[in-house]
Length: 291
Image 1 (cartoon, helix red, strand yellow):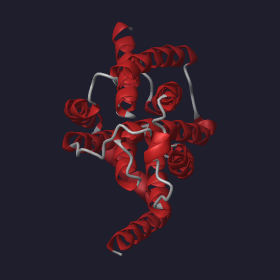
Image 2: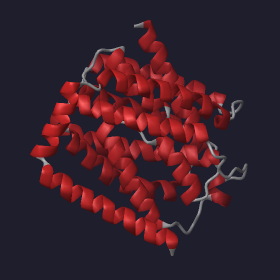
Image 3: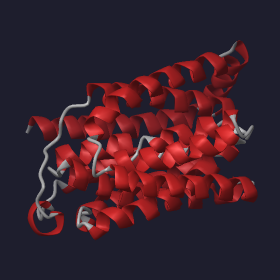
């Protein structure tokens, strides 16, 4: 129990400091320390991340480091993807969701370790560097994609949102973190709606983890004044890589491979259709970049 409380506080601290990242620990913590099933852990994670992000975003909003227009544009698209991901999760076995989660962890760790320095600035977010003209098509595409990941495996997507907001909208790091927290709240709510018909929640455990994570987010809000999140990200990225590798080692088995094959056979037409849509969108995105 002590380890669970400590891990929950760490989740809140990292979520507040990085605008994400802490949430990527929530599912493994709930599966391995609280002994929840994969699907229950994902739903509980969404509740914890939603409430903790809502508390954390208040700190950034007070210092005018949230770009509401950018967040709403990205967030609305993300809500569509998150709801779809939540509905889709009902048809995927828990062990496969954990393998998908571990794969996302590894991808996230590479992004954190690379840690390219985004645009920085100390100006007032609301007045000076919140963009008026946004690359709407790119933001909508990325929003749906990140939202789908959120709904499917319960990850808030902050590790994807912060770089996307910095690159697509040109936000300084602190504004990107604050805005990503706002988007995470919207996506988590939509994902929970997608999971509504198949969710199972341990209320006492959820309250315990959430309250500890909220406490951690308050600590993280104070630490943002003295810690440069760019340096923290690389060390955390190494930790996420090791944890993701452990998760893959634990979950991959002959039985899991058989489950994946069966899933592909049973939903062959759906997978073909979904793959066609994804490839088409990616080709359009590539075309728009080239032009």
